[in-house]
Length: 183
Image 1 (cartoon, rainbow, N blue to C red):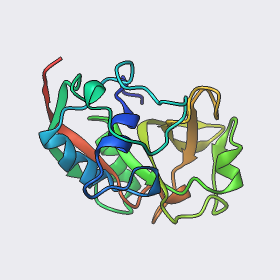
Image 2: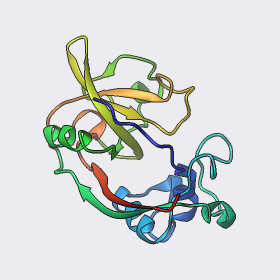
Image 3: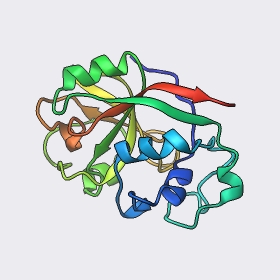
Image 4: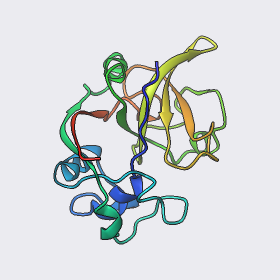
């Protein structure tokens, strides 16, 4: 199952949400949602990555003012519960934190990442957009922010397992339940 995915600006959050989050040096999805309750998020086309890839920088207030969507309400998925994550994906896309610094993730091109090679020490935020089965292996379909040249056209399939899950995907899932759209 896959949800339609609007493209909002990661760079807007990385550069402008700095009171609690630290850009590319660390953050938290719940904190980003708190920022978005009082600051509207821009579309990716209005506030794109400055270098084609995310990096911490100074907030471009002109681009940030083009923001048009606020988080009115968000909800956490129960931690380490892949069935609950699948249920949340039936309603909306879900922000998840994963470990992305291992070779298995960095060099991903196709198939389903399974097992423990990815690790569970969270260091990267991505968006789970659906789930499915490939060759008998259940997976979460995840959109990465590293551009279409990475992975499978910007996407990765992460195996569904109990506990923390592959790459730690089950540890900190959150999703928006209500938005205020000014677009």
